[in-house]
Length: 237
Image 1 (cartoon, rainbow, N blue to C red):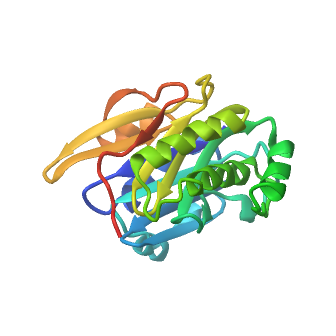
Image 2: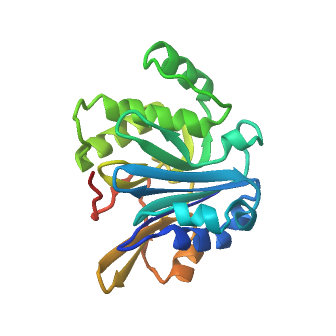
Image 3: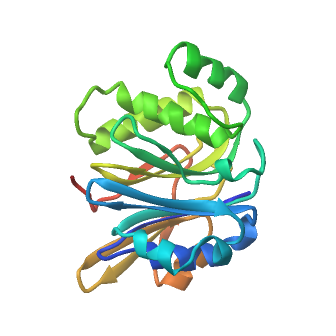
């Protein structure tokens, strides 16, 4: 069980991600991490420990950007090492950061496929890194220079076809924004929230509605089993 959170705001979201992770801390106390999009850059900080110990003022100052994701980890696959803290990051295609709650039960076969067919190397024992690389490969097959919402949702469908297990996922895709999806059986929870600000609508995705309540988002609905959701608010290079 891990905690995941994604926010699409109208101003910097790093502090809100930190606050949201503190109320999701019961879902994972092994490690924590935050990634944000700032123009054409992804800023990422993660480490072992509780949220309050992983981030300091200097770290938070670097986590600029109005779109971001956060994760607090409870290790169920892989080791407890700091290299398996999330979000994970891969630079191809586009640049993708991913936070994952759940378990894949066909990880061994997927690792083999990723190496032999997709030509992708997995560097940790985490099934989250496997899931990220499956998603990245399927998104790369679209062949487009810049990602579209349709490209991402087709990639999500391909992930569902390849990955077996229960999973809820938040991702950042450079050139697009926040993408979230949930396994076809809806085993892992994922809830969508909405907030009106002076500058426009803001969105949040979380493992539990307690994070939405703290941050002032109104719960809209659960992400449906098998659904892929792409934020209406885009981020561009």
